[in-house]
Length: 175
Image (cartoon, rainbow, N blue to C red; front, side):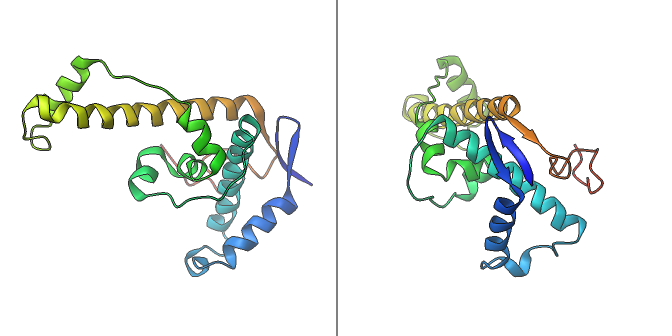
């Protein structure tokens, strides 16, 4: 049985079940919802979202390697699935290709609005501010690119919709 397709590649229900088993046997198992509960079914749906995103990235950049831990600030800035993708070697390799720049007036505006964070002179603070703004812009561009490729390449089968999809019966995620 197929949970989703990514281009010509299938993610099977067995693939999802193996990944869920790894989670339920891992160190965070006591914190995970019961598999038969609405929250447990949404965890399964979220996991399919992650697996399809990982597959999109793997198809775009075929690269092996070990995952790395994601820091909390990156996870909070980019969102759970994108942060998890950035933990993979392929995700990091693709992210490294993202280029962005920030106009000088944006750096100055940020400095002027955030003097409590940057008490020094503009000339001293601007390199750090520019680096932060460039990193944030790169993360935004990467997330938008990844979401776009996901829309183009992924087909989710019934029962594996996004956890926030109002058409699925366990939808509790609202915007």
